[in-house]
Image (cartoon, chains in turn red, green):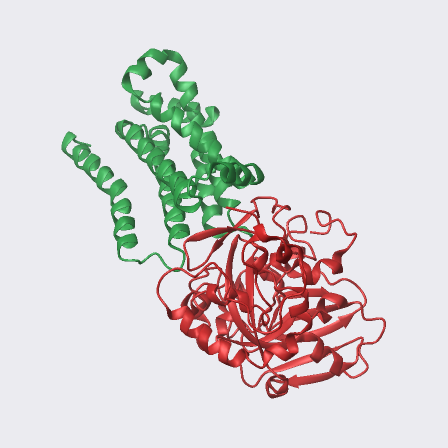
Length: 328
Length: 208
């Protein structure tokens, strides 16, 4: 295995120019779907560049670096690597249903996602409850992200959703709001896994305010161009692509803006193993296993794990000067 | 138990030990191992290894508890099968999963306490497998017995390896740990002595 393929990282200018590029994403999503159904291994080289030329970057000026990725829509460079839908929807961690990743889909089959309310409150000027219709009324975009699970596997998923910042702006956070706290539904009638004591229910996750407002952070309502399957966190979930998957909390019913760092369910269960940040980092092993590589679901391959899951250009600034080993 | 029954039991053990391998091969062939076949195969091989390892400790426990020692002859077979599965489990991990990439394996293993304890168990089982050759058993003489008590250390490491494989404490690894604990408690000298004394008394009949 070689060094990190820099072409897999969304370049900064692309991130800044995203809005203009998003329009073409509908067609891209359709193409992605076809690509995912195509037989054979995913092509490792990124698609040829289209659109505006890349700004000067070290690898672009280095002739030995080989072909470089051109500007892309968010995650377009991952398009050829999409994980097949059957794996995305058939291999899930959703402990509210079961600890078995392959059994979630059947157990969550009849999960009721409508009506659905998300209560947003805490340190905000305009607390309010968003119905599912309100949430779907936000302009939805396609985002192709790699999801890296703390267990050592990853998938590439074409999400449909919108930046969390858009929703947070609506409720007008007060200056005291420093963190965002999320809660998953905990409905014993529908979720057989809640009888298990492995975690304290409801499932809780949290983000720092700047992480929550970051443009890569989205609330997802669909994948592969369709509504989210229940096992993937229907009807609305968080996706924070540079953090381990457990941060991307599913089936959200409550969002609170708070002053203190929230204690997530995993921090509570094992504080020495799961920290608040949970940023993907190949150099900081889990206390019991290495995070240096990841199994790529659907390919039978293994790849080197990248710092911040390959999104370091976009998010490294958020953690400037922080000891990532201490703040794991 | 008659000779005939023991012969059938031996056949049953061989069939029972090899059947999972055949089933696994068939599942792999028919693509029945789920979304992550390598992980599934590795996990199943590991589970069979642990199951056989725990089963290999049962004959001694039965002898201590009941005085019935005929099963002890199967310890070696069960232990060797446990080692076979442990080796296949390791080969699936190192080969199928990591493509025998040595530098990567060194990195991954050195960073993973889960893998270190697993490898430790495998090494112990390897030593025990080699020293179960009849010629070596004789050569080792009185050292053979203490050496082969290491099987309990190996089993403990395997249980730890299993427990550490998950983010949270799960039911099956806990159950395996409980079974191992029972098999260990049975071997505690005070209990062994007590049971033996009782049996000797029973043989002599009630003392007046």
